[in-house]
Amino acid sequence: DDVDKELERRGHRFCRYADDIQVYVRSRRAGERVMASLSDFLENSLRLTVNRAKSAVDRPWSRGYLGYTLTRHKLPRLTLAKASLQRLMQRVREILKRGRGHHTRRVIDELTPVLRGWASYFSLVDVKRPLEALDQWVRRRLRCVIWRQWKRPGTRRRKLLALGLDEPRAKKSAGNGRGPWWNAGASHMNQALPRKWFEQQGLISVLGTARGLSRSS
Image (tube, rainbow, N blue to C red; front, side, top):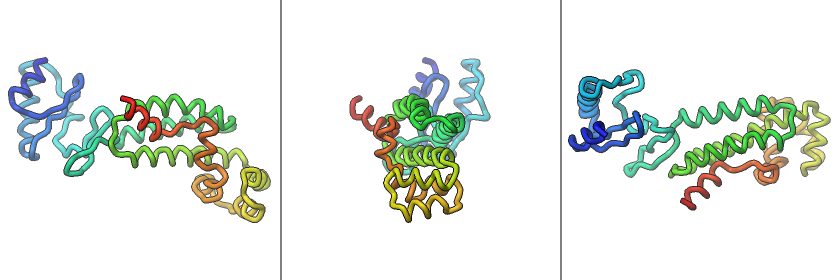
């Protein structure tokens, strides 16, 4: 359309989807100049409104675009925008909060379409570490919910024994007096409820799902 043609005429490198545009230049000074001239073109020639609050001149890795951003490498790689990750984490918290008292598999069933849809959208990312960290965080949140459900030291001891811990360790871990979040990340809960256990309950890996979709596309 007219915006694309104008940016091409000026020789800019840019990325546009609907009304979201990023223009890439070599310096902040050039960015400020392009920002002013492009805003003038949009408002005066095309009679469009520029959202000044959301518009800025900044480094590419400091700006998100459609949920993605770029790394600071000499050859940039596609990764997650911080805001995208925070929104998903908040969604997971809400699901787990509603699921307190429910069976773990039921909570995982509610999580699955959210995680699968998110992994599908972000299957283009080149950096795996944020997705790997997200998988670890989701499992820890689930362990936290389970630890709360066990409530009493006696129940926690029996559950840990049933999940393969020896008697001395199960007894010590059950009565350690620490909070749920600490216990969710402790070695006794990681041993009792490893990644394989969650996979058996139906929990998908965001990293694994994204990588599988990326390879098949």
